[in-house]
Image 1 (tube, helix red, strand yellow):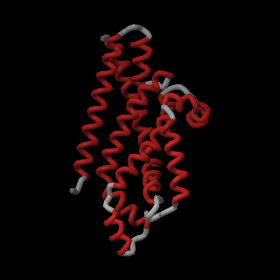
Image 2: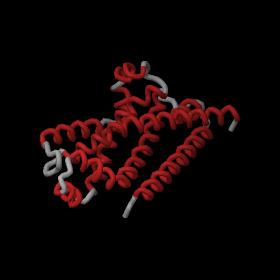
Image 3: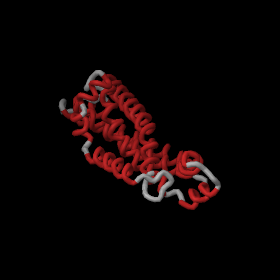
Image 4: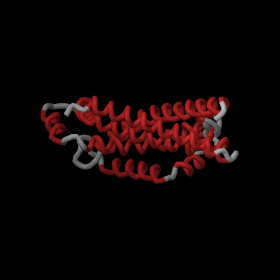
Length: 217
């Protein structure tokens, strides 16, 4: 592989990391509160509001059901409004973030449900408010599980970012399509796959280590 192609590969890797990092931060800021709401507003929970919970769960399920490539195309006007363009890495961050928010919400919900309800009852008996329970019981106790679930979301975003390259999203997917597939250069496709595999392995390793470090059990 030529030096020029190596430079292109490194540039594409940087674009992918930037897309995933920015999208993940934005989606996490919205997704964690969403997951908390999904748990705490359910029947028998500290902020019980069943109608609200059902509507919220329905919206989350609806967004999660849309395939990412269709979502990217469907929200092009919104992407242009937010990013000023519908092509490139900045534009790709918009659908990546929107797709990740409900995914994170459900993953956080799963982690929070693993917190023993006895801890919640004990906090209620001590006079803790719902917000105090969320901040001092739910989130700290579920943090190892939340980190593990967020690691899964990051890996999914890496795959989605590669898919975004198929319609001009930049990153490794764009490199594989334009320089590998369209120019009949299998070595570029292979190099892209290897880089993606290494990236995913590093993310999984880091996520596992962090979750293990936060686990108090």
